Length: 248
Length: 248
Image (cartoon, rainbow over all chains, first blue to last red; front, side, top):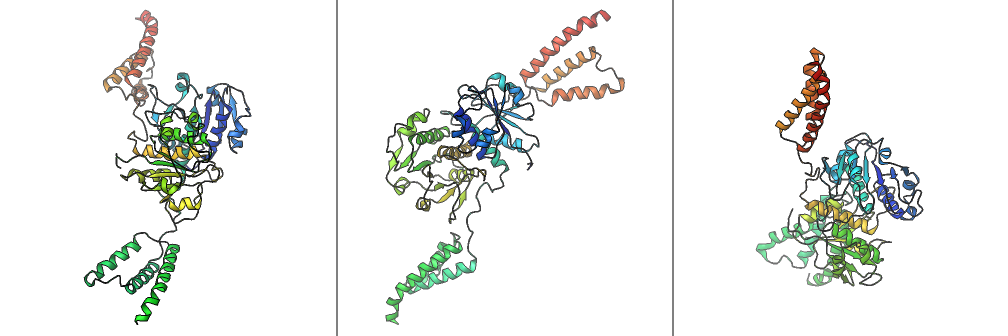
């Protein structure tokens, strides 16, 4: 993976509604894509209906470039993926969004992601100029992705492929407390339970203590959580003390 | 991965606009999710503005259930993920959408994906009942995902985690032609090139032939493509023949 791979361009081929162009800009910027190219937008450009739907991704729209033909729009791009819902029988490799993202990240040159008009999608002649097909695996019984959703998923996978956040689990959990803190808690709990006569069956004391230890160990409590437990135990000990002291 | 894992429920907590509920239904059904649960929707339920935005995912809306409280909405679910844009400091594991999807698929019981109201997101009390946090890694400078986009990405990753399509490359390419077909093509091309006096530098013939072979071998042409090539070669041979025949 090259850290310097430029983010792919998004080429909207004959887009119809300004609102959808705006929604695409928003989806792009969410995942760090800024190079928008419009091929023969139906209602001309700039289209004032795009900006309100971009929710602040204005700079993508401000910098969008218009081209009369697809060939001109992609002339400087290296690998161009054409997005289709149902890949027609074409002699081109077909990638999922994550497959395309991996390929694009492996290159140093800028790639392009082509999307067709809202109603009809890309025409066969548009597909012919692409190097590969990108298709989103969807529910075979309901595959109605709109333009901005298709852009969102392709952009999301591109961002994800370069993101250094561990994919499985973000490191936001504070992490378990030091073991000594846990031992202190276990000892304090033990003390309260002994005072409460919890360990009252002689031949099960060892097993019961192991069970209590496990209850407190497996959750990997953080420092904060251990402190909260210590407060609870303290309160419980305080409640018990009046009962126990008179018997002493 | 359990093939029998039920698709997760989507719990929309105090959703505001019917249009957004409809867009969520569409995003859900695109990736095979059908169990929508609404907690105290602001404008009541059913909300007629939802259906037009669902683009045909009516059955998700028709079957949506309304609950007065979050606790009731999730009572039967096993692991519940709360979606947040910026995870607050909470002692809960934080997952990416793909991390959560992997976890959900590993279970046999139904999980839930919680999403907050459009403007404010989930409140701290809502987050407290979740088992884990789900957050989408986004452009740190522009992380404006709307409700349906967040649902789309979580649902997409769930579908992807159970999809048996090879992630990298769908098997839509017809595959290379049988080697004998390729050899036949190479021989036919050789013949045309010889007739055209292409191999005219004696000590480079072998290398030139290897180059031609490589040009035709590396693309892994399909049967259809080989047939197209044979037609081209045939035509070229036909064009050449008149030039060559007079010299014979």
